[in-house]
Image 1 (tube, rainbow, N blue to C red):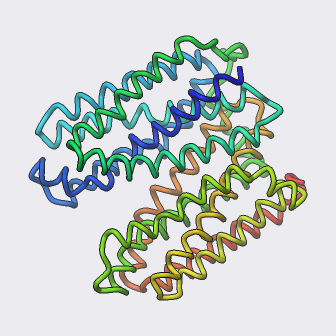
Image 2: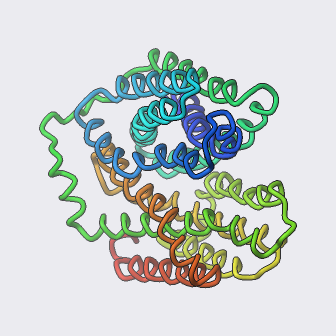
Length: 377
């Protein structure tokens, strides 16, 4: 089943590309639909919000029903809804079908991550690292290549291009064996509470929530900070700062070597936290070049933690669908809240306070993780 890895990784890249492609296209979308930037921001908001609650539902479904069928149908409808959305010049029609599409995205991501943890149980850490790298690359490709296709042709073409490739992926998975041989028809939603009531799982999930909350706090409000700090800065220069996202790919691919050097997953997670905190601290230095460098440090720490926590959870939970549903729910819940809540204290108290508050949150999560060390060594 190793041949299955290629379409899984490609589909993960494609799904995140389609998710984030509209983000840099916001001005073009606003002009086309004759709406303002506040309203057009909902295009991304309605996409991310379902990721905060839907994975736990899909994790449950993946333990009861055919993983293959859920993945194929989700891919098909995700692509179809995007193409239907692109066919209208009415903004709310577009937004409605974008929301319907967003309900499919958590199903795809949860199914892909579950597939990777089932095809080679002895290589869970390696496969999850591949998944993290693929999703990171997908977000980058969606933003950059989507913008390029939009300039070359149109935003319709860019989004339809990714949607068409998703149709192809749905077709490809039709030819692979269904890895749902251990379906548990007796599983219930109460099974989630078993994990949430045990410290060894709850600590990981809290760390995951804080991790992505902190990450989104910085990356969401960094453009505002740069605009305030450097009056003549261009959008291109701001965009270049986000090249640090690419360290997510490198951190993921090198995670096995990092674990080997640091002797254990636990030590690697602690190292990731420390790098993450160092990145936040360096963000307080008001210098454009240093902001660029800081993003690489910051992203490296975050993605190291991302790889380790996901693997630790999968290693401890036999029901992989539930494990990945829980993980993605806490992950994206932190992301959604981290995109909104810091705006309140950033506007009043400024960038340095945001960075310090983020550092304190990460230190609290690290302290909690260290306190329950016995579960992870």
